[in-house]
Image (tube, rainbow, N blue to C red; front, side, top):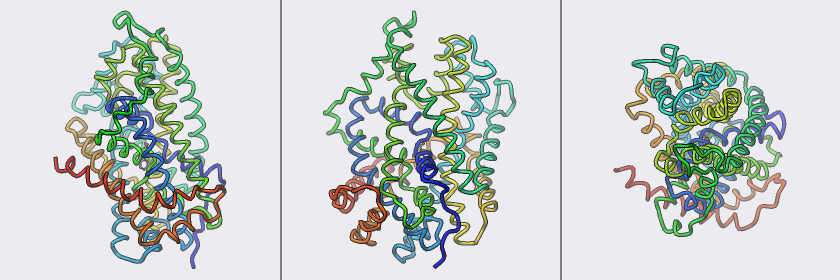
Length: 468
Ligand code: PHE
């Protein structure tokens, strides 16, 4: 039996890398928008229920499958699934997951590259003295390659290539590289997030501008945090909540399997999985809801936020709002905000590279360097259309197909595989093996019946949206 030669350096490193995998742009850019578009407080209850009934079970499944496959020297989802149950179909599902990763990274790394550019521009004071319209215009011209007015021709392309090169370089350093980035990036991300959130939470009415005398940051928070039970009857809100849970936890595409394949066979996975999942939840619901929405509501009013919610707000509006704090603080806030987004992004995009690299290793024996550079090249090839045709909606297509439909599909098949084909007796043993916590027995039932049913429901009820 071959064993993997590499493994995580320390437990802290593993948890931070896994939390970094989960904590991403989705926590800060996608969550607040989803919440606002789905009625604010109406979103929170379905979101939490989906976390407990689908998120946590899938984390247990993916962590334990990964560790199980790793025992046999496998590094990639197709091989990991194959080691659980022999069968061609399963291998194809694994390969499908690898392509999902590639498709997601193609647009994800593009947003990540904006954050590097925006750190640069915050430092340079580019946004100083700009009106709200001018800050938005800056973004529009940044992504519109036909007439660049940001000062650097083809800036979007340059930063995109830079960003991918950096990812590739770190991946070529192996797990150690990934672990190091997580150990530096995650604490800084939380520090920056907490500082900005305190500013958001304490803004109160002080930010109210002449134009919007009623603007109030607390309105934004109340809107998000006043639960509305009526939403429980609205399938649309449930689908959005489930989609967000998948995306934010990075389940349904094999990245977790591939990280977990490097967990030593005797080591805990249950407590690790729960820790990383809760850390992601904290960053998402506490920090993710305390920055963009309240700060924007504090200056522009809640109505404006509800009507303009979109992930572009982070780039088109935030730099303008920071400017209201004076040039020095604006620079610090800009560096913190876009720096935070950068760390969130890179710890996730590195995870998206791992399934491809693992597969090249399992299938062709490729080493890290070869794996990393081929991944970088592929991501560049797939990503350039998002860079060149951003305004033509290519981006949304990628997000819908790769970032939503594929995740649910993969998750649906894997839960059936785990609970019904691999079998819950073996599965439950795997999850509990080496565990540092006692998992409530109820989860055995949930994983076997509730999670597949819910997933099936999400899967089939999203078909009309797909056909649409
Ligand atoms: N969970 C990440 C986020 O919230 C996105 C991601 C999806 C990362 C899939 C890895 C794999 O931004």
